[in-house]
Length: 132
Image (cartoon, rainbow, N blue to C red; front, side, top):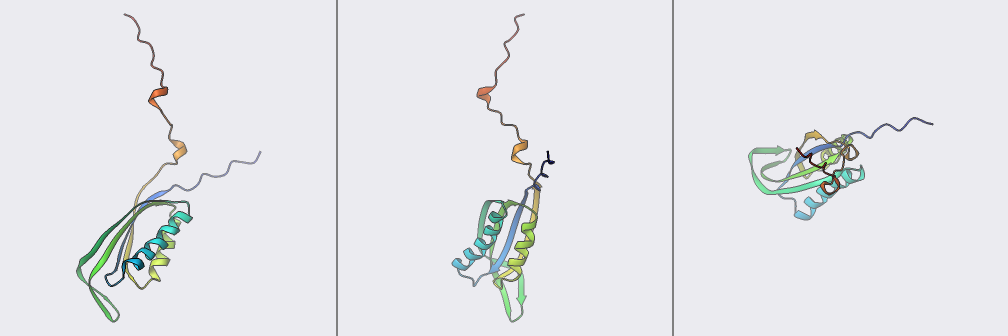
């Protein structure tokens, strides 16, 4: 028989933090998030949370050629995915003029779900107590 296939690479927990220009309307901000979340889902990942912190004042002015920004929209996306998704996000976000900065923060690698043993307390038979 042929050897079993290699196990899939572990899913890794990531936080994607983005700083988007404050002049970007909400539908366009949703479009940016949709592109990133579609990349995660297409790779077999799981999107666990999206948090918008709204428009915030920046700690210092961001200078982009011809522009100065003193406030921006801040968004956080949490997901479990293969490490290759990070490179895909970097390409998407680097080509989008509306995104000023982004960073991926890596969390712990998750175990494959099959490695967890399912235990239902209703199915555990309790050993009878010994009489003393």
